[in-house]
Image (cartoon, rainbow, N blue to C red; front, side, top):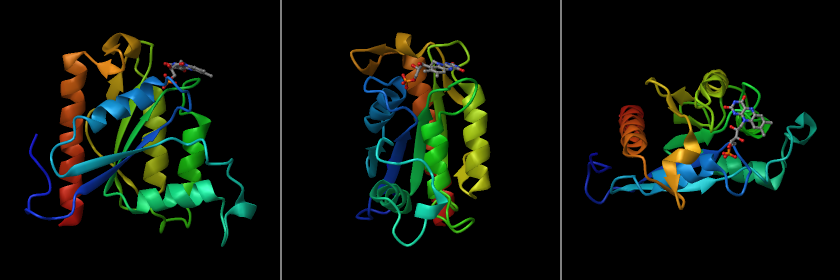
Length: 193
Ligand SMILES: Cc1cc2nc3c(=O)[nH]c(=O)nc-3n(C[C@H](O)[C@H](O)[C@H](O)COP(=O)(O)O)c2cc1C
């Protein structure tokens, strides 16, 4: 994986990692923590979970939205790219993630999500790795004019078996995540041009 950015002394590239799970011992959040250890020189990754984002309410989506929403939108605006990792709930994306995308998507077509490169990852104890949720996340981000990156799905099946003591020990998963991260950084380079 090549270091980033290319110019010496340039500001670091900022990735915002968003977990679709609120669970304390979430595998999705653990995947994102592990990705934080895989980023190359010149890249920083900040992790965000969505406890502070209330249910979407158009009446509150005005001049003074809830603080959790202000922070979410500021974090997205300040990031060069997004890394989302989520479980699948009942064949779809978790409500908390869809809710966050809904808040962050306003004003429509001019929100902090517009033009934002995004890597989407799903993880599940099941054999499909959450691919159905992944399709929904991609579709919702497309509606916001974000740039979900075009690459094969990064879906991690049997996710508990990939971990030991909070670390991903499965090398295939590690290499897949590194490759996906590379593709995200390529997309960020493209957008910055
Ligand atoms: C309400 C609910 C629905 C679920 N539905 C699915 C599903 O459709 N597909 C799947 O692969 N896993 C499903 N699961 C299992 C989750 O993938 C599993 O709980 C996972 O570990 C949650 O992610 P986390 O570890 O990041 O919290 C479901 C879990 C819950 C709580």
